[in-house]
Structures are given as C-alpha cells and as structure tokens.
Image (cartoon, rainbow, N blue to C red):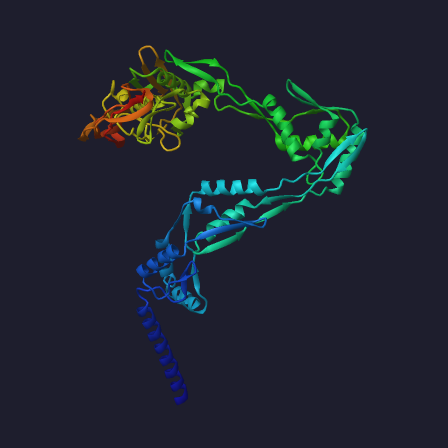
Length: 571
C-alpha cells in the first residue's frame, strides 16, 4: 500500500515539475519567438518581434538576393530589373505565432515539434506578375527549340515519311514558381531552368493508316461545305493534315485550315435592333442567329473522312448561337417610357473632340441593360484608340492636359451619369475628373461629372427596375450639345440631387511657360487652362411611396490646375 502511495506521489511530483517547467518556459518566451524558428533560413528563435524584424531586414540588406538562371550551359542574372518587395512584418508575425495557435494541446504539440525539428517560415514576396511573366516568356522565346514534326510526302504516287526532330520548351509555370520562392531567400540563388522535351517520334499505327488512306485518295479532292460556303482540299493539302505522332489530325495544319475558313463560315449573333419613338418601340432590324464551327466535331469528322476515303464531301458541323434579344421578345422587355435623361454642352471643343463625342455616343446608343444587370460604360463603349476610329483630342494624363486618342469620351460618360441620376438608378462606380473642366459646367453646377479611363476608371450603374432599360444618345454637332435618354418602365421612384456644396477652394498655381524649340520665337501656345481647386459634394436621394430606397453622397476632389503655355524659341 505504501509503495502505491509513493508511486502516486512520485507521479504527482513529476507532473507538477513538468507543469512548473512548462509554465516557466511559457513565461520566459511570453514576448519572444520560440526556439528553433527561422525566417528564410535566418534564425530568430529567442528574439522579440522588433529584433527579429531588424535582423531579417538587415540580413537581406547586407546579403542581397540575386537570382541566377542557368540554361544551356550559360548563366543569366538580369532579373534585377523586376522590383521585389518582401513582407518582413508578416513573416515575423507568423514566426511569433508558432506554438501559439489553436488550443493548449495544439500549442504544446507544436512547441515540442519545434524543439525536435526546427520550423521554417517562408518570407512572402510581392512583384509585378506581368513583368515576371514577360521576362520568362522572352527567356523561353530565346531558348526554346521548336519541334519538327514528322510529315508525309507524296512523290509520284508513293507516300513516305520524313522523320521529325524533338523540340525543347522552357517549363514557364514551374520556372515562375521557382523564382518566386527564391526571391524570399537572401544571398545568391541559382536556378537550373526547367525544360521539357517535346517528343516527335511518329506513332506506328497513325503513320500506317495515314499512308494507306493517302494512297487510296490518289488525286481525288475532299469538298468542305457549310451553307453557301464551300472549298476543296487537294491531295497535297490532305497530306499535311494527317497527324503522325499524337492525333489523327495534325493540330497545326488543322488550325491553318480553320484560319482559312472560319471567317467565311462563322457569324456572330446580333440582337434585334429597335428605337423608341412616340411612346412605342419601333423595330427596324431583326435579330441574326450566329454560327460557330463545332471544333471538336469538325476535327473528329474530318479525321474519319480522311481515313475512310468513302466520300468526297463533308458538311462542316456548326453550332447556332442565339442572340440575347429576338424580334418577338421586343414587346416583353418592359421598355415603355422615358425614365431618365441627361444633357451636357461642349462649346468651343476642337473638331477632334467633337468627332470623338459623336463616335462614343453612337457606340453607347441602343445599349440594353437587363434586369439586375450592371451597366459598364467601358465595356459598352469598347476600345478607345486610334485603331478603333478615335481622333486625337485633349485628355488628362500624368497631371497634364495633352493630346491623346479619344479625348472627349468623358463628355459622353458625364451625360450618361446625369441620365442615370435622373432615372434614380443606383450608381455603383463613378470617378470625378482631376480638375474642374469647363465643358461640364457650361450647363450644370460643378461636381456632376464622370471620368472614364480603362481599366482604372469606369462609370457603372445597376438596373434594379425589374425590366429592361434602353440607353439612347443623340448629339447635336452644330450646337455642340448632347442628350442621353434612358427608357424602361417607371416604378414610382423619384430621384433628387442637392445643390452642390463647394469648399476648400484654392487658387491655381502661377502660369507656367515651357520653352518649345518647335515654335517660332515669340509665339505662345496654351496647353493647359487655369482652374481653381475645390472640394465639391452633392447628395443623391431616391424615394418611392414616401420611403427612401437609397441615399448617397458624391464627392469630387478637384486639384488646382495650372495654366501652361508653350513658348517658342525657334529662330
């Protein structure tokens, strides 16, 4: 009995000592990182967070990271052109939390594991993914060896095989991942660029059946048809279409064939187009059902036709693509009446700006917004560049007013903004101009403008009316005014905007004169016009049946704008 009591006391004492030791251990490291923890290979165990941060940051400063890529027996070390940021704060916080996560049992378990085997915290890095992808793409372009696929040749009716040669490709995804990892490690790091071999050895079965089929085809041709379109494949063209390594049809030659016929076979679906006149929707162009080549079916059927040699004509399989709006559905859209309008004036605009306003308005005109859909000005107007028809006019760029493609498009976005406000629609995205632009205050109080610049600035609103809405634009290029009408179904809502509040007005900086050697001496050319800076706000409130649906305050922080003149120095 005494032995049992003694054993119990011993066990109790051992437990008490272990608990006391553990409590002492926790108290000793209450503000410190537990032992055997490191960040990017730098030991930080036993340090407080401030010391650990300073050590890791200093280590990277004194042992800067340099990445060397090794490929084809040569070293490349010009990755320094990509800026890399390292999050030491996050890594130190993670190191401190080792052994402190979860419940008590989890913490004890983690602390024991750390003592037995050290714990490594990776240092997170941030960088421009597009820059790294572009770098790796260029590296691959410089070092990839394109495969030469085996092919058939038909000489005097005798079909034979010309063997190919294997290619080599940089494994770009793996390389990007490796670079991202070693950027979080100090000192010089060498990466052997991962490459994969593209095997081109011909497949015996595919090769034998291709030779047999081509021999049977002889000089016959295969006709391809789709609707009114038709073309023929000669014997020489069919030779290249046979795949000898992986598939019945050679992918490259199939894509070449598609490039030749796709544009003539395929059509895009087009919605029924209509306008709203005299309280009626007037149709003037029916919908067009689109057609796309069913690529998997076409490839499979083409392969079967080439191998079977039992018919000389193949119908290209197509898939019909339906338009969103059909003629028969026009009267079901709920477009019954005018629900909002916006106006603006742009007197004194240069010809290029007038042209761009008219062009952008035409590309917004007729836009349909489905119930619950968010309207995006950028998505609706499309590309704004010289390539899409826009002329050069003044835009705001880099803190200056300069000539650029599409100047004047913001006249249209501003007018759409005013129409959406008048219609009582929720504005989900809007950005004010950098400074007070005179065009937008010709017939409006300040602050009711909306700039657009893809992809950083967009104008968006939500159609929450329960019916389709139709956006229509009209531009008077003689009087330099424009109008945006939004049609739909009124649901009893009323919109109101308060008088804009103007505060913190600041005068424009002194006029800046910039010497321009392209202008004659004494000639001045104004490129920027002075504007007072100001904070402008107005309240937007939409009510229905005496209840507020939503309310929002729009803020505009206009910078003071400096008048700039180019001063001629040319003699």
